[in-house]
Image (cartoon, rainbow, N blue to C red):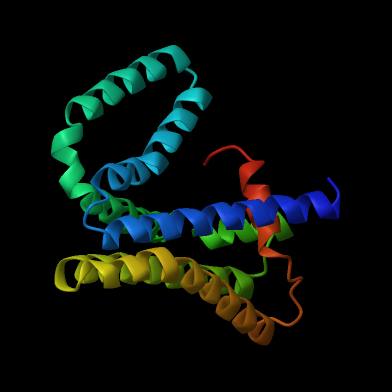
Length: 212
């Protein structure tokens, strides 16, 4: 894949994400956007469900279940419309909470911390100081996602919907990017001798290995 193609692909992903965020925010601040709001809110769930069904070893059964679920949503459409903002919150806070639990779960005794696992995929065996560091980074990510999930819930129920929508749609991505930048700076300072691979190398390696 050429550099131009890679750049175009990333620009497309960024544009799609930005467009979705703007559309989701618009539906949250517009009182008459019930139909559009429920459609936009359900879109990520529908895409994830289709992807899971397609990659399942029981594809036929999964698509049958997906069809039944779609029929249920259609029957409940009118009931769901006024509450589409709750779906947005469930998606946002739920994702942050699941990520928090995933990172925290890997810190249990006898388990390999998630960031240690990713680092070994990219760099191979790690020295003890680096293993300790990646364990601390795993804990930091668990705390970060836990705080994000809690903040999402507090803002959704305790602040104007527009404020929560700005946080969820426009601050989540930059805050995650900032977390990566801070971790990278800390790693460069504490472990200058470590090979500092690009974060995308870890993501690519993760998708190329079997599930744990």
